[in-house]
Length: 370
Image (cartoon, rainbow, N blue to C red; front, side, top):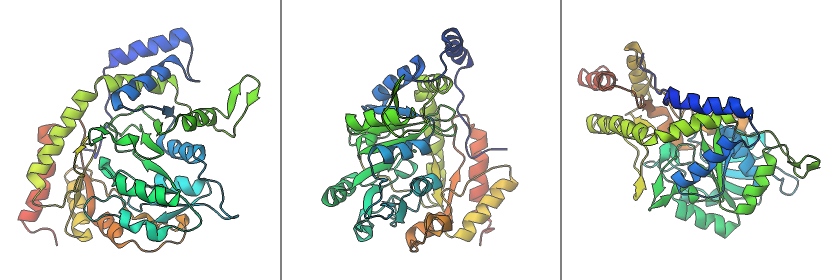
């Protein structure tokens, strides 16, 4: 079976060395030395400041919302945040979970990111923030979104779960917005098994969030903030340090897989239009087919041949009832219906990838798809 993704497992001997240190120190959590080291190394690797490690990517979003104060009700009603319907459920459900109402604006049909021209019409007196997503590591129109936010006094929190290591115009894409969040889930390009991070624009927001992730506790007898437990532990940090040591080899292998797909399938499927001046991280290979029927048939044919592709993202989130009443978003709904993410991971061998490509190309060549 060829899965759609596979966790990258680093050198076991090096991981064992980190684990031996954990056993010697008997320090498992609460900002241990490995978490501190990982924070420092990630800031250097990514070219950012004010990075805070947390226990998963969803909590990264929720802590960012609260640290920036966008969750507070407005005029006695729930605050609103404008976001994209073409994303993983956590982007929107994290807003709803924290008492905010996600308001969906449609995406650009080529980049698949939140379209700035669709944002302003959604702004109301309840709007506190914009929560765009760098979809599949592709940069949103950060300049236009920043201008809208400034004009309307809104915060911007980027869900950058797919954008690890992505640079835009020579600097980290993660520097844009009041905050940008990362997921370090096992299936991500960089991972800690489970985990995440927030990159804050302002030091004061980082300091407030540090209190929040430790129950609001600031000392043995001091509790200054409403908090929760969202700390990244030493075992997670050990995995992250090992994965980080091997990032260049990991990314090179994924780029080789991505480039092969692009070369062999570009004429058969629609690919995402990437922003200019962007360094891509090859975290995903999304392909949009002629119709939803074709996409479903391709997924079924691949499965019959022992290959798992994923309808990611599907469905378009304005159709998810528990998120609240939302207008139909035609572009997002269309792309969500026709998209498949094909298998991509560092250890996907040439022969395995060839099977994926051959199944897709032969299906079209023999007219099996209708």
